[in-house]
Image 1 (cartoon, rainbow, N blue to C red):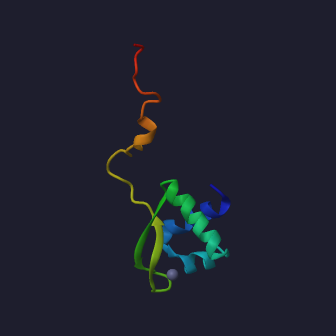
Image 2: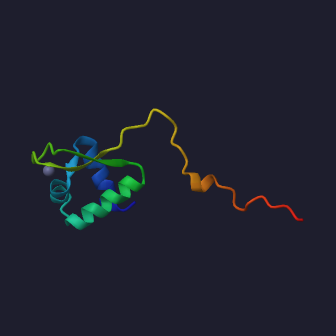
Image 3: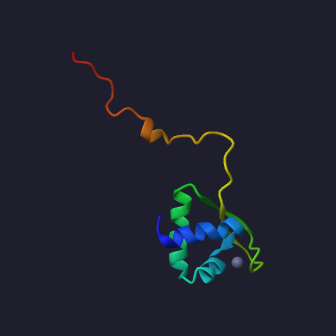
Length: 90
Ligand SMILES: [Zn+2]
């Protein structure tokens, strides 16, 4: 995770941010903000919701802290798949 993603993670602890407010707050481009968002979402730290931004009041896609799930995280099926199919010699 890069520095910008870490700063974004700290910011959304306090307030969910839309792209324009977030990039303004982090003093970066919209593109850099989206890259940081993607890093947080794929890392399971953040999620995106369509809500009214608390900063600018616009209904926008917000980056917010991911709610902790009440169940254990389910492993993706691909990683649990056996490496080779069971095929005995004939
Ligand atoms: Zn905003």
